[in-house]
Every structure is written in structure tokens, then in C-alpha cells.
Length: 289
Ligand SMILES: Nc1nc2c(ncn2[C@@H]2O[C@H](COP(=O)(O)OP(=O)(O)O)[C@@H](O)[C@H]2O)c(=O)[nH]1
Ligand SMILES: [Mg+2]
Image (cartoon, rainbow, N blue to C red; front, side, top):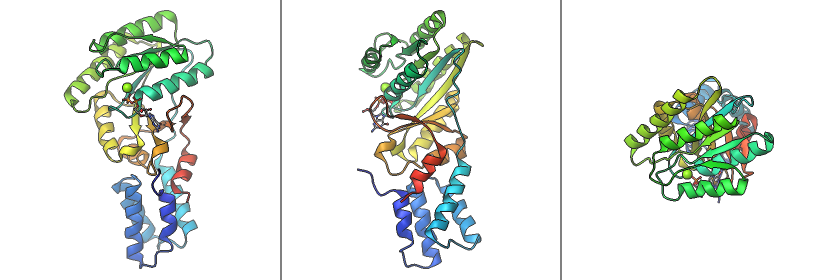
């Protein structure tokens, strides 16, 4: 069950019979609880107060809409149909990497009919990760490059890239392990995979690094993003489990502090539960009662 959304709570703010100071304290608390971040919250609150407060619910919504839109960059997948697109799918365990990688594959199978798409089972660490991706490949009728669990992820990625280039594929989706409890190993493995792709992929490859962020994890997501961004550099965000949270404001601190834009929104476990990020819709969702 979704908790009360920010929009619903904002609505109640106006039936709240407190003085101005209390009003802004309540507002700040709501914005922080929606994961919009302390920085954005304080700046917005200061601006509203120095502009003489807010007159009505409509007034507050309008100002919030404007401020939120200003924070969120427009981002697109950055794919190029004339080349091989290699997408490294990053994120900690359980955020939804494998599931959403399969959704992207499903989508491009439809959008780019006839183009070669390959999946690479780069999570060789977690038991059953290879099987999980294999199942998706079978269901979607796509090629998969894999080795057994415990093998070298770098070797899997090398083979996948080699064969995708040889076949003239247009999309190679690389799954990775997200063992957050062992940060040093995680970073080391990602740097290795990253190095292999950079070395092997020349002009004829469009390389994108997509960070998968679980909308239900709150501010932890920001710390995770920092780790991945520092290790290999992230190009865009895929926000998952948007269907299971009433918060979802995490895209604001991700944009503000790391300059990252959201490309995709995942809102379910089915193959069709993936949409291109739409700034206007996202903001309306956040603030609508
Ligand atoms: N409700 C919901 N569940 C999701 C979404 N994306 C992934 N999941 C579920 O989250 C769990 C972990 O997903 P998985 O792809 O295995 O995560 P990984 O460890 O990052 O590869 C699975 O049970 C997925 O079905 C989403 O957008 N919404
Ligand atoms: Mg996985």
C-alpha cells in the first residue's frame, strides 16, 4: 500500500491552523519525507518565506511545480541506431537491475525490429543471477552471453562485446553484480568491466552507463549513486519500484548533487512496466492531491 503522498499531505497543510512558522516547519518536514533533500527543501522554504509566504494551496502547488521542474534535467537514453549501443546496468543488489534490463530489451525488440539485441550475464557473483537472465532471454527470444556463476565477469563482457560487434548487433545490455556489502570488490569489478568496454569499444560503439535506483530506499540511494558515479561515471538513472512508494522525490537530490537525470521509470514487474521519464508528469504525480 502506498503511504500518503506528498500531494495529499500538502492539501492538509492548508487546513492546519497554525502560525506561519509552524506552517513552514510542516511544509519542510513533508518535503524532506518525500526525499526531495534537505538542501532543496531549505532553499525553497527560504524563498517562499522571503517572498511573503504562500496565499493558497494553488499558489503553493504552482510554486512547487515551477521549482521542481527547474531542478530536473531532461534526459534521454542517448541510443544511436546506427551503432552498437552498450548499456552497463549498475546498482546495488535488489534494486531491479536484471528485471529492468529485460524490460529495456523487450522495448527495443519492438522499437527496433530486426536489429540484433544481446544480453550479457555480467552478474557472475550472485547465485541464480545467470539463470534469472537466461529465463528472460528465453521468454523474450533474445541471445544471451553467459558463463557459470563464479566465473570472471570481465571475461563474460569481453565475449559478449566481441560477438555483438561481429554480428552487427545494435544493443548489448550488460547485467552486473551489486554486492554493496563488499564495496571494494564491487568497485574493482566494475572498474575492470568498464576498462574492458572502453578499451575494446571504439568509435563504432555508443557506451552508456545506466544507474538503477530503487525509489523506496530514500536517501540511501544518493549515497549509492555517489559510489557508482565515482567508480565509473553514470550517464543516466532508471528509477524503479515507483509503483511501491509515495515518495519518489529522490530524483531531485540526484540531479542537484550529482547532475544526474532520469531516463526511465519502472513501475511494476512486468515487461511493459517501463516508461520514458516525463518531467511534467513526474512533477504532477508528486504534487497532485
Ligand atoms: N514493484 C516493482 N518491483 C520491481 C520493479 N523492478 C524490479 N522489481 C522487483 O524487485 C526485485 C529485485 O529485482 P532484480 O531485477 O532481481 O534486482 P537486481 O538484484 O538489481 O538485479 C524483484 O522481485 C523484481 O521483480 C518495479 O519497478 N516495481
Ligand atoms: Mg540481478
